[in-house]
Amino acid sequence: MLTKTFGSAVQGVNAYTITIEVVVSQGTGFFVVGLPDNAIKESQQRVEAALKFRGYRMPRTKVVVNMAPADIRKEGSSYDLPIALGILHASQQLTTERLSEYIIMGELALDGELRPVRGVLPIAIQARKEGFKGFILPRGNAQEAAIVNNLDIIPVDTMQEAVDFLEGRQAITPVVIDTRDVFQQLANQYTADFADVQGQENIKRALEIAAAGGHNVIMIGPPGAGKTMLAKRLPSILPALNMQEALESTKIHSVAGKLGADASLLNTRPFRSPHHTISDVALVGGGGNPQPGEISLAHNGVLFLDELPEFKRTVLEVMRQPLEERRVTISRAKVSIDFPANFMLIASMNPCPCGYYNHPEKECVCGPGVVQRYLNKVSGPLLDRIDLHVEVTPVTFDQMTETRRSEDSRSIQERVEQARQRQAARFREFAEIHSNAMMPSQMVKDICRIDQAGLTLLKTAMERLGLSARAYDRILKVARTIADLAGTEEIQIQHLAEAIQYRSLDREGWAG
Image (cartoon, rainbow, N blue to C red; front, side, top):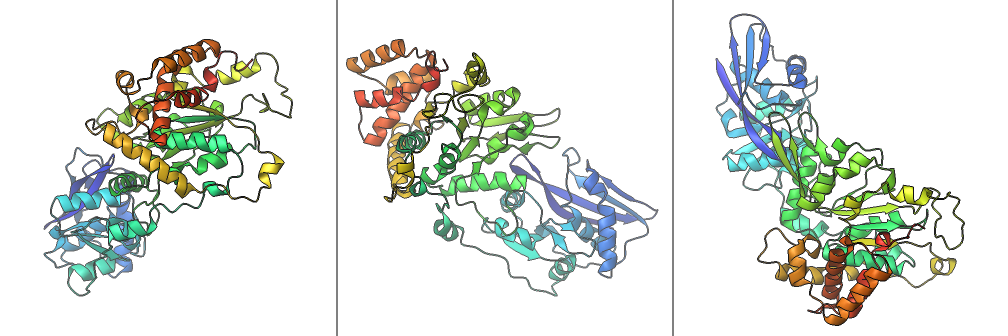
């Protein structure tokens, strides 16, 4: 007897429906075909143990499981439940006509209980698109799948519950959540706030400019100056996530298995902070079955690289293309997958190996040339993609003990959102450009025009400070953002002057 159940395979951030055909016939043996990995081949042991534990029998004849289409690689243990139900139906231990109405996924424990699986959100989206009535899945994934409306999300704790539901012996109420209501209640709630930061007003200003224009930032300063603390608070001043961005980010985290049990839609911007020992594959994504890396997990949020020169050179260089294109393409012999990677890069570093070069109180003990060699670990092409270079100095005792509370994140965020609205109006005819940081060079010349006094100031600054040619466009972009924050159409000379000071690492002789 031939039985068909339906599962799903995830490639990149999209899902593809898999038809699982089961035939029980004369002969002996258990065979799984259709490009399964080892985890699927081992499902025989899990399925057999679960069936016996729940009082069913495993056929002692020939069982063939075909996973079509056969040219798509299937991975993971999430096919245990559809395979088990297919075997029960093919051996006439399950009598139902409803198997074709549902996508079914779930990993079986040996006692028939179900464990959560990854990639549920893109699977649910594809199931609705293809007209399935519902999605039978482990209870731990139900909240995530319920983001998708017009699809019955049937949560089950055990294989037996799935059997009873399909045979009509047990009614299970589909999980329904008002996604927009839940999202609006929880959106924009961050534990870290700029109100907690004493002093560092110039750094807060730089981060406000970065948030307003989508600019990448590098902070240079001694240990304990507050670089990490400030970076962690950056998401709290970025514009609040909209529904489309939340769905995009949630899909990526779902595929990577980062949402956790009972998780639903992401309601805050992601903040990823990988350790400097990370590999290039872990950063940009990859693997035999390509998975999203840290830059994709930071999509619509912030990627923070602490101690930037300590990262391997190859790791930093693979970021150059994604920083420009806002996506990363992972190519393998049989498949090529695009992952979105529209993130803000925030990096921090010490000014030298000992950390105290240019420190107002402590003396640097690094030898001649050591500081320059340390800074050279960060390549010019990577620095070329970072708009703001900010020097962070330690907070004084008087600043630390001030009783006056600093400006909170919500106040800063309102100004940032107003600046972003001006940019949205400016770039409404350009679908790929959403902020000043995304402007190509030709557009910079048209949009970031400055008067004769501004040109004179910029020329003088570039000559006296020894700024490189690549700093020219960056200064104009940042000046445009500062003007947007001030609510002016024209870039004024004070906006240009402020932008010039954010190019520390471009100055000749900065490292002595």
